[in-house]
Every structure is written in structure tokens, then in C-alpha cells.
Image (tube, rainbow, N blue to C red; front, top):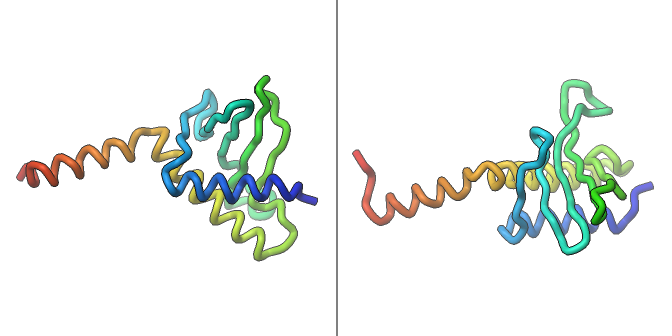
Amino acid sequence: MIYPKLMTVAFKLASSTNAGHTKWQETEVDGMYQTSFARSSIRIATRRSKIDELSNEYFIEVLNADGDVVAELGDEDPSDIDERGRLYTALKETFEVAQRHASGADDILDDIIEEIDREGLPF
């Protein structure tokens, strides 16, 4: 059974990330991103699916202040298919935004848009 608060955290994190309120950084693990809170952190990444070996599963890890993983939730964990689909969408979108944010792509694109608006296209 999934800890209900962990599902709440996943959906609130997705909403906050999509609204631009949650900032993500790269970690020492390639393809894993982290956001920090006062006494904890959350990491998001992908791993090989347990259900379909050709797919990936999106998952989050909750870390305490010492860096220990205290909870984990993957998009394949819910037994209810509708809940699994909602969680997949939320974690996938969160991962994609985290990846863009950590790479600096969003900032670069914002700079380009601002420059085009100010000066027009360079060609």
C-alpha cells in the first residue's frame, strides 16, 4: 500500500514545479534531479520499468537531512490503473521540467525570447 501523504507530496510537487515555484538542480547521478527544503530533499529520476522492460518508470525519493532515503514512490506503484496514469503524467511532467531547469534550457530560451522581442530576429 502507498503512503497517502507521499501521493499528496508527488502531486503538490508537480503543481509547484509546473508553476515555476520549485527549482531543481542536477545531482551526482546522471539523469537525477533534486530540489531541497528546510529539512529534506526530493530527487526525481527514471529507471527501467518493472512492468514493461521497454519503458521507463518515473520515481521520486524523499531524503532526510542526513541524505538518507526515507520514502520512495514510482509511477507504477499505485494498484489503481487510473491513479497510476495520473501519477505517471505528474511525475513525467515534473521530470521534464526539472531536466530543463537543471540544464539551464529555460533560462537560455527566456534570454533568447527577450532578445528577439527587444531587437528582432538577427537575420
